Structures are given as structure tokens and as C-alpha cells.
Length: 110
Length: 142
Image 1 (spheres, one colour):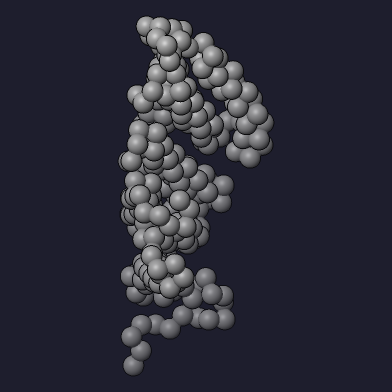
Image 2: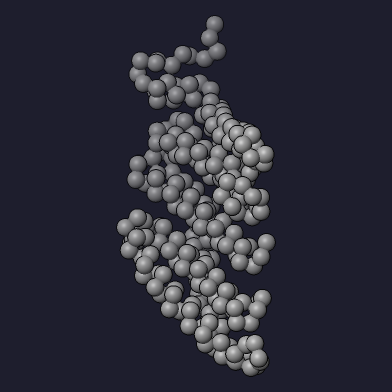
């Protein structure tokens, strides 16, 4: 017994993504969260290993921008993410930029 | 965090927000995206308000620099009364800076795109900093 109707993988990866998103609506959001967490945790842990300190605001902005770019690609076709999700992603990126520009942590860029 | 740094931080927050929202909207328009951030009225209104704020900052910097140009202090042994040697710096260097950047900005961002405000913001923040540094050189810490 399958959890949901299997996508037709012979018609392209985008069709498989849309079919999966139709069956499991949280799927695109899970991809965005995964990418955000991967960039954020990878960046901070690697920087901490190299320099002893992690610039958390910087990596939050970078993870936010990466997620925004990915969500913009998701907007090209219908059925992957909606306007509310896109708005939340952009809002999180802007808030992380506020944190970054107002932080006085010595990191990668200052 | 000093006055220059906090002003730059606030300006960069505004610029980042304008650039991100403008990019997202233009991306949707250029690629005929089915979901476009321009469909969200709150983001469009926020972007418009931020642009107005940057324009007001630009105008305020000009007014502030004009006031600085016409100000005098009592002549003392360590400071000249008019401070002309410092005041000549802002206006000349700002117009040169603007002209040097104008073509490059137009080529990259277009002459009438949503990113035009970035040049205005950059000019105004540099104008603010030049005025601040000239004032500090002439009279001391503001």
C-alpha cells in the first residue's frame, strides 16, 4: 500500500514534483526548510570549525536568499507553492537581513 | 555602534528589502510566473513606502549639507570660522561620484527599472557620510 499516488517519473522531474506536491501539499515547504537548514547548519558549523566563531546572522541571510531563489523557481509553474508561502520566505529573508545589518559580530564580511 | 554605522545599517536594510521585493516581482513578470509577489498588496505597498523613505532621506541629506555649508562657528585658534576648506569637499565629490556611477548603474539596472532607487540611496548615504566626516574634521565629534 502506497502512502499516495506515485508520480509518473518518465514525464520529467518537474511533473514528479508537482504530482507529489498535489498529493502531499507540505512537500515543497519541506524542501525549502531542508535547504534553509542545510545552508544554515553547514555554514555555521564550518565557519566555527575554521575560525572558532560562527556568524549566525550572515548565514541566516545566506540561507534565506538561497531559499528565496528556490521558491522563486517554484513559482514558475502552478501547484508547488502559493503566494502566502512565497511571502513568508521573503519576509524571513528580510528579517534576517535586519538582524545581519544591525549585528556587530565580526564574521565573514565585517 | 556609531552614528555612521547605524545610519548605514538602517539604509542597507531598506535597500535590501527594496532590492529583494523588486527582484521577486520583476522575476515573476519576466518569466510569466503563475505566482508573483506583485500579487501581494502588502509587499507592493511596503516597497513603495520604502522608496519614498529613501527619497526623503536623500532630500534631507541635501538640506542637511546645505545647512552645514552655511554654518559658521566662532573663530578659535584650532578651528577656522567658516570651515571653507572642509565644506568644498561634499558638493564637488558627490556630483563626481554620481556621474561616475550613473552609466554603470544604467547599464546594469536599466534607466527606468525598479532598481533606480538604489543609485539615489547610494548617493544619499555617501553624501551623509561625507558631510559627517567634514563636520568631524572641522568641529569635532557631532
